[in-house]
Length: 160
Length: 115
Image (cartoon, rainbow over the protein chains, first blue to last red):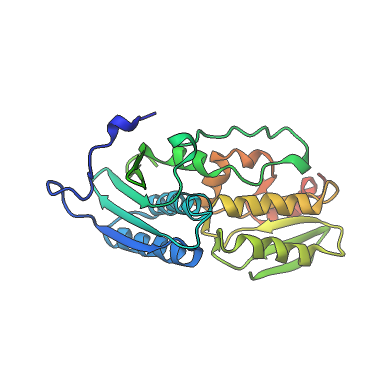
């Protein structure tokens, strides 16, 4: 997997690169998250992103932001999420920032391989999120910096 | 959560009349399925043809609904849109359910009636 060395300082917002196509700051609450996702997808659709890619974008962003609401900010009553993205020719580059708890061990969790041969009662009802994020993104990288979680990833527009 | 129920043949067909089963909708989904399937004993086909978006919470809620119905009442899926199908494939949960193209397909086959 890509390691932390991939991350350059503030790729999306640096002076040398173009400004983001989407830049949203919103409360880490479910309703606000749903609206932010829909706004992001609408903006990317207006920029010519096809339906199949938008579906992937929405799932990945839902998993990333749900994790932030449920885990990073779990012990806190409030917090914000900053979401930026740039649409390029072959991919969309994303950056998601929060000020919540660090990811366990400071690392992106690996994909959980569930045993699906087990009893009905023991089938998994969760633990799918990071697997979906890993499967649907490239250049996935995480950094903890000055109390912030910075997650960056790309979604391909050519390999869907 | 708007879900309609119809019994046809030996199957109870639950059609999700919403476009999203996400973190917000997941609990309502489970509660509604619980209510609609109480006091019945047919196998259930969940028609997802209107659902354009599902995340891991929604997927978890469908698994929870399957557990709720128990061993003797299988829960099958029908009408998966491309993005919903992708989520089931990537998480390998497609192996846990019988998946039909449509509720009609499920009705045509006796396979749907047994676990």
